[in-house]
Image (cartoon, rainbow, N blue to C red; front, side, top):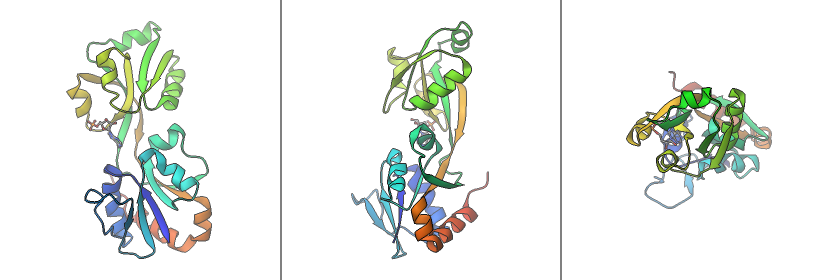
Length: 213
Ligand code: AMP
């Protein structure tokens, strides 16, 4: 049995065409059932649904052989002992700094002000601002980052931006692009050895179906 860990939403939806290229179709709709283990048209392949940030943990400890997760999750602290053979070029977005439209970020940075930054990505943010020589106090949040500058909790946020619509709706502006993000395939190292042939077939099919930009 090959177990693939996915998170619901964009990653699940955008992985389906890659699975199709490998001759695998998920036979259950995760939005219509509460099941966490989904069967596929291949009796030896199943999909497990986990939180995006738990995908590396499942794959690292062998709860899943393969997983798809964002580069943001991997870089923030979940890439130990994982083989990362493919940039799937799906769920593309960027990690950016954003502030209220009326906040003069450039001047604050130039003057050496200490910034309060709210984010889910404290490690990536710490490294980024340290590399710029900007002093920051980081506030860890688990969601709705956009609210932080609006309520006075923080001067800036670090979050994923895709279309920019969420920022715009909340009167925030993107002031720095930290890095481009996309989803990666991760593989359990032991599984790669023990189930080499079936996993290789899936990797090759995924590789041939990666969207070109
Ligand atoms: P958007 O309004 O299209 O710029 O999307 C921004 C919102 O969607 C923010 O709340 C982000 O945290 C979230 N988001 C955008 N892209 C992704 C992604 N690839 N994976 C997870 N969350 C994302």
